[in-house]
Length: 249
Image 1: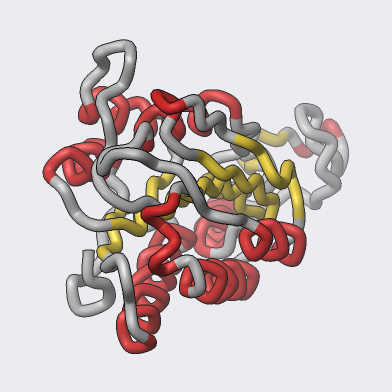
Image 2: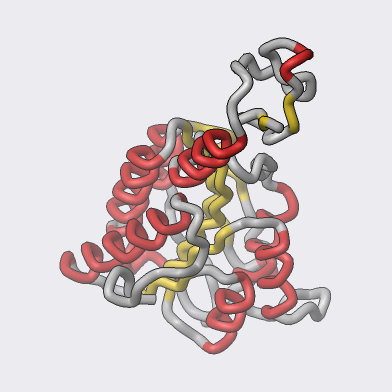
């Protein structure tokens, strides 16, 4: 039996050279070769859906100049790994103080996403913790994540400062993290490390890249290197398995 290298459905030589399920035009391939094709496609997925959200409160202002630098380098890294980037960009604040989230880009390019990030003006935020988890849950539920497990990857990237407030529903961070993992979305947080955010990342099988409120150029470079190392492993299909020498999380 042979398999379609696009959707992995079984193929029958009697039906011709087009897959009856997805229509992919293909000569009948022995199963061993088909599996090799699938493995190659997993290493280099065709597309990445990125749902990115940035804390737009005043507390982020201390390192606002660094965020476009980090974000731009991360997008450049992703563009070198995949054929297509599909990016949503959001700005969020503290919803308890009527700071409503705003979607700045929907299914945009890297250039559109970076322009949106550069345009953010920071302000507000009246206490230390913000409603970060509420925004992360929102992105998880409203983003049009890719559903082809072989051909795409899903990345939820959040730039945060300070800790998160609890979810209004009472759901724990570990429960939210488990939902992220179940949807096959890889979570990346660029933030100060707190026990609450660590619980979220650990349950999601994601990565927490630490950053201070006022990073210098050396710290920015370290954050970029850590993010790119983690993203490279994620794009390869290795999930959360990554040598500690390659990325500090």
